[in-house]
Image (cartoon, rainbow, N blue to C red; front, top):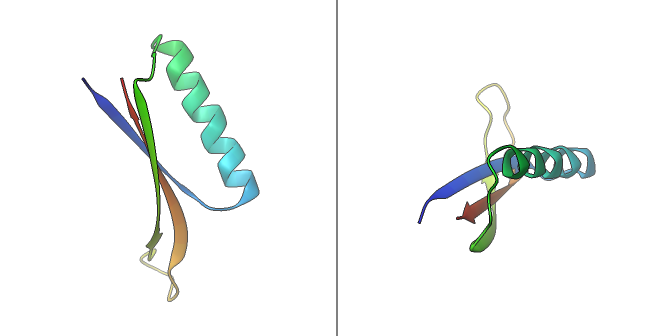
Length: 61
């Protein structure tokens, strides 16, 4: 079994972009997911003072 992990910001636009990216990746590589996990966390960009919420999506195939 293999895994591919995607990390994105938690905004409506960013989630739409992540959906498009994941769908394109799955179609291009003919992926059939066996399990999907999602987690929320925080990332602190180097130039920013505040942490930003992120979503981590792992697709096991």
